[in-house]
Length: 258
Image (cartoon, rainbow, N blue to C red; front, top):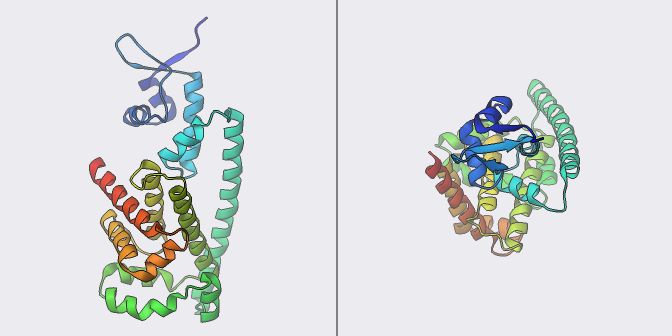
C-alpha cells in the first residue's frame, strides 16, 4: 500500500511555509521532493516532511541555508542524530537567552544607578584591544553621521556582560571565517555569504542598523586600514581580503533578490 503523499500546496498549508519558499528549497538542494507527477509537479512524502521539520529547526537556530544543506546532507547522520544535535543547540540557546535577560537587568541597573563601565573593565573584555583608544578618531571621522550617533546611544548603556557577549560573538564569527578560508571555501560561495550576513546582523544588533551597502564599505575598510586588517589577519593571514570579498558577495546577492 502506497504511503501518503502531499502536493506542494498541501505542504504549504500544513507547515505555514510558502510555496515559493518550498520551490526555493528544492532549487538550491535543501529539500528535494521525493517524486514528481507526470505533469512535473512536486510530490512530497512523510520522510520529506520529517526533513522539512529538521530544516525549520535549523532555521530557528539561526543557520543559513548553506549550513543547513551541509548539515542534513551528512551521510553519517540519521534523523535521531540530527534531532539530538538540534536539541543540544537549543539548550545552549536557552542558556544564552537567560544570560541575555541577566545582561539586560544589569544594563537597566546601570542606567538607574548612573553607572558606566570603567577603563579596566573595557580592557578586560577586549583583551589587547581597547576601544577607548579609537574613540576620538571615530568621533572625528563619523561623529556627524546617524550611524555613529546610534552606536553611541546604544553602547553607552552597555555593561561589562554586554561587552563580553558582543566581543564573544565577534570572535566566534572571525574564527568561523578563518576555518572556511583554511578549508578552501570560496569567499564568494554561499556558505561564506551566509556568514557575512551573520556578521552584518551582528553589527546591526549591537551597534547600528547596518545596510548591505554599509557592510560592503566595512569590508573595504578592513583591507584599507592596517589596524582592522591586523584584527582579521590575526585569525588567519589574508583573512581581511577573504572577509571583504564575502561581504561584497553577500551585498550582491541581496541586490539580486530584491
